[in-house]
Image (cartoon, rainbow, N blue to C red; front, side, top):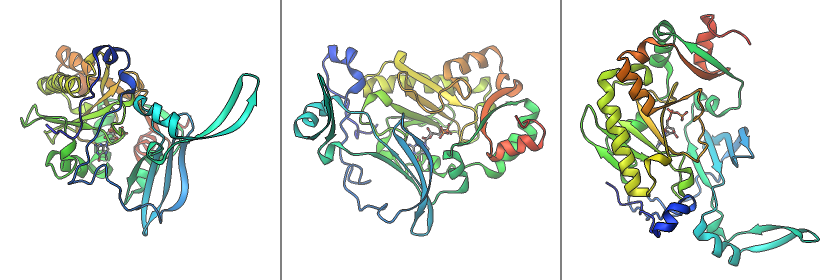
Length: 330
Ligand code: M7G
């Protein structure tokens, strides 16, 4: 178990009422350079287009080039941590914008160390990454057992995203210092670590993923009753580890699988129940507890049942479904 993340130290009262905005301390990791200042690899980023821009989520997805390589940069303004509030109010510069009666608005310019932005870089990025982040029309697709065999499976085998990053985690070649909990059993084992969507600065957008050790389970579709011990192990140990490390109880967690996932190596998402995480809607997320119950009731549930999921208009899988006459031009 890694010591990179410190469990927040708060009183019991605070723990129950005010956990949401707690700041999670991170130590500087000497191996990965995490937490230390790095040369600005984005200084020469050549912007080609804005793929998506959400003012509500304060996130922007940019497509461009870094040193002749295709790249995607995702920038996100993060929530304000409670423990930096006093410093923020005291040490910021305040510029008055408008005053009317009892109302006034200001532009607050915080000290540099309190105005950081979470930034994710994908480089070299493929055309598939560009499509993933582009705003597109979305369609709901129904996939039968036969559709999976004749359309989806060949697609997965020929053109899904590389899962090299997953193998790097399992083999401790990357992110080893970020592991929260792991079980080495080849059949029921997994690794739990922070998802790269989470900067670990506050608990209200908590997001971890459990990656299974077994390399032959692509997705929900492959699950059978023989996998129930694996799923129960992930559920129980994942909940325990998150309670121990972050003081977030199981009843505050949304634990689910995506169908379709972006990466076809079985993994489970653990997010804070209060966080409206991308992809947590009913059309894509399957609660792990429901999955376990369904498999206990019917061992071949996910093999036999039609499954529904959203696809973006020019996703290559959508193209295959359209070619097979399964996705009408609506
Ligand atoms: P998914 O359901 O396959 O696809 O989930 P989604 O990205 O459309 O949700 C894969 C999960 O793995 C996502 O939540 C990603 O943010 C996360 N993820 C992807 N990559 C490449 C990494 C990585 O390199 N490290 C970590 N820690 N998480 C990643």
